[in-house]
Image (cartoon, rainbow, N blue to C red; front, side):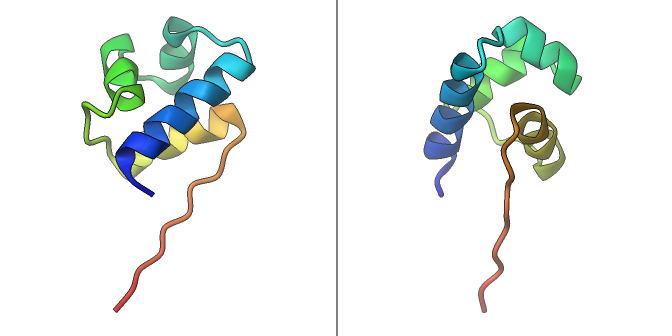
Length: 67
């Protein structure tokens, strides 16, 4: 999954749950600016940050390592 797809998924889930960007950012312990950048594919967030946001939204991020 590309970061653009992930950002869109996070934004859509946030809107479905009727959570504002400021509220989600506060819950995740990140700045509103960072959340905006994640949702709009303008950031390269850490796995930790993505996982924090995903957990709040009831999403699960899975990584696959290929050889």
